[in-house]
Amino acid sequence: MHHTRPVSLLSKRVRQSATATAKMEAPPFASSASSSSLFSLRNNPLSSPKITHFYNTKQSKNFTVRASSSGDSVVTLLDYGAGNVRSIRNAIRFLGFDIKDVQTPQDIFNASRLVFPGVGAFAAAMEVLSKTGMDEALCSYIEKDRPFLGICLGLQLLFESSEENGPVKGLGLIPGTVGRFDSSNGFRVPHIGWNALQITKDSGILDDVGNHHVYFVHSYRATPSDDNNEWISSTCDYGEKFIASIRRGNVHAVQFHPEKSGDVGLSILRRFLNPKSNMAKKPGEGKASKLAKRVIACLDVRTNDKGDLVVTKGDQYDVREHTKENEVRNLGKPVDLAGQYYKDGADEVSFLNITGFRDFPLGDLPMLQVLRYTSENVFVPLTVGGGIRDFTDSTGRYYSSLEVASEYFRSGADKISIGSDAVYAAEEYLRTGVRTGKTSLEQISRVYGNQAVMVSIDPRRVYVKDPNDVQLKTIRVSSLGPNGEEYAWYQCTVNGGREGRPIGAYELAKAVEELGAGEILLNCIDCDGQGKGFDVDLIKLISDAVSIPVIASSGAGAPEHFSEVFNKTNASAALAAGIFHRKEVPIQAVKEHLLKEDIEVRI
Image 1 (cartoon, rainbow, N blue to C red):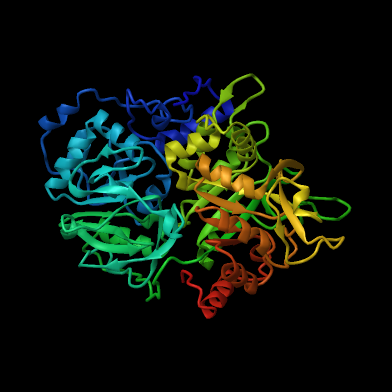
Image 2 (cartoon, rainbow, N blue to C red):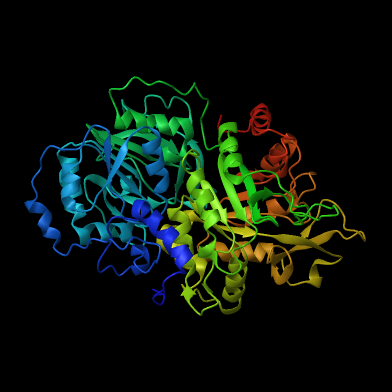
């Protein structure tokens, strides 16, 4: 495994802001001798200095169980330091509860209710749990039928083992092995998006789900069997039937993310946290039956000439008004717009910082604050992209892309999007055929899972008369080029579309999938801001070439453009920016149109 060099302290301005955040958000404990040092993030200058280490894992056998002295409003959170747990913190606080972080195994025994939001990779999580003595404390707590809610990896770790980088031994409370989805049947892996549940028994916390979609993001799953059937409270179909939730007594765990499932997810959390409460607001009846196509709102964010962070929109990547002042196009404030899109029904919100943190990614505190504030009231997935790469600042201090990404995850991002850096990594991989493990793509996907890593591809169409004129993948285009050309290839660009590279979108997509990307955001510079529809030729080419989800982007101008791209390609989601910002086409209008076209969406 690649180990980064020790990181120097940040500038005083960044350090002070980071320290204030770290006191509340940093993981309360981490592995002391983990071979996965990247996972423990102990070199991250933005992590809390207050790390507790445990060496004797047998200690936990001597702990006593006593009634919690905490009030009924306190939720104990087991946060072992990976991924975005800010969202579950915010959801718990949003519902009126306080949070106590687990510092020692004894804190688990003292909990009146325990939430375990597992994020990241199975092996790394188990390593931290065993090194700190939390594994035995957790098992004892659950075996005594204490109130417990595991989320995502927090469900998987309850099983006997996982095939993820394994086999790796789990907590062994539930019979079965966690395995990877089979992508050979045409289903995209990771399983990302809003899917339906089949509730198999009284689950208590799922009583208000009805026929609503909930949000999944994972590559591994546990499957039902005679041995674990008594635990299962719901299943989900995605090429095969897998376990979506379990319940035994007061013990619950879900594969999906309630903190990212909107009002439906909040109702699930509320029922767990306060099972005796009368639900004030119940979600209406839904019509969920399968994986929904996602409608994503994108916010291009940058500083304007006054230094304010604004949402802007380009016309073929030009974001300045064609006026005498030539000012940056200003379409609103990022946090406010994101909140409005959540209310309007966006399935995800994506922030693209087109300033790109060119000099100092971790110094871009306003963007980190945008994520933090947005995640307080927006309970759908958040993606952030722009400048996530290894870099050395002006004083010669080195920072790894993993450290940059880690701070975005801790600030509220569920996924990070890599652009130019992924192009360079793919070019090198195609040249050498070697996966070094050192690229930002590989490092981040290894620690956080490939479902947390998106690659943004920004190609331009290059017309050719004869496909043999280039050694890259060409296609016959549906509309002829300016000189009657019938063929084209798609040249990838870097630096915000300003520089073309000798690699095609097809070659790039195949390479980044192999390097660890879990999703592709597919833009098209030619269509950007034109409002004439997505580049269906490009999206079909790429979505047919890879087995990971593809998001169609650039060119949406009407609801019909969304149904066209879903009917003619294998795109899993479609993204728009300008038409939503300018209120030309509301998100609900898009979804109502898709429903009329018999395309499943979350309502």
